[in-house]
Image (tube, rainbow, N blue to C red; front, side, top):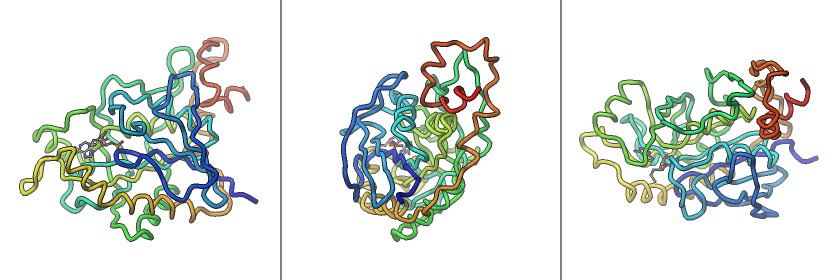
Length: 291
Ligand SMILES: CSC[C@H]1O[C@H](OP(=O)(O)O)[C@H](O)[C@@H]1O
Ligand SMILES: Nc1ncnc2[nH]cnc12
């Protein structure tokens, strides 16, 4: 019997494909929230269904501020995903997370602005908990997969999501360090929030590509440095993804995140906007149908 996992992989800067995928087919999905970043690669690795989405599109045409994360998460849910593993290039805000090391996110600080960050707008309001924004089970498996690929890993990282696309000023970089952030990027928010709203357990592997600009002995980050590091460690990232999929247990046990909307929707049934409910068919169909 095939494993009952369907893993959505979101590939970040420098990771526009994955290896080891069979029966592959790029398919364009429509969503009520607009277009996802690209077609989704459907396929399988052994007996696990896999869906891969390059976050910025193939060839990287979409800026972090221009990402339609609602469409991306809706499309992955629609594609049958049970869980999401996101990969991101990140700047390091800590000496001990040197470029080349992988950092598994445990917390996020959302310092983005003006992004559409919820599926549940007026007409169907929901408040999901983001106290523990990642799935511990996926994060633990992700850390093991990096180690098995012979990558260096740091766990428990706090990811600061900045707006961009410009990199931080030195003052900002020092401030984020003082806030307790360990790694910095421009994309995991609102992606992780939306995954939670869609009842999709989410984990993020950050690949440290630079020391941002706080470090006195290192050059300030630029795109060339990020891409150089991604190139150096891209094969390792791909290997880690493959290890992650291959090491999944045979049976996916239920996660509390699978049903987190049960206690989150506050709008009374007779006050719900039918047009919005129709848009929520993939994200919240499970709970809306049962009410
Ligand atoms: C190319 S450097 C900045 C760029 O890289 C990261 O993207 P992703 O998280 O998709 O790997 C960062 O968030 C910026 O979007
Ligand atoms: N220093 C940095 N700041 C924001 N996003 C990044 N992605 C990779 N390095 C980064």
